[in-house]
Image (cartoon, rainbow, N blue to C red):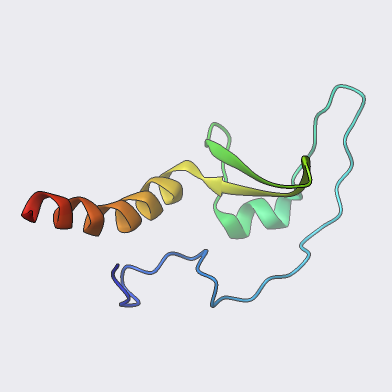
Length: 89
C-alpha cells in the first residue's frame, strides 16, 4: 500500500479527531450539519456522503460521514496495489 503523503487520505489514522458539534435528530429523523462545518468540509447542496457504521455486540456504536469521492479514492488506494499484485501472478 502506498505510504507517501501525496496518496494519504485526509481520514488516515495519523490525524487528530475532535467533537465538531452535537446535533439533534428531529421527529422525521433529519439532522442538520452546522454551517461552519459544512463550509470547512466543502459540503454543498447535492453532495453525496457515505454513512459508515461500526457495530459492537450487535449495536451500532459509531458512525462516520465520508464524501463519496473521498471514499472512492480511499478504495482505489487500498485495492489498487492488491489488484496489481494479483495481475502480476
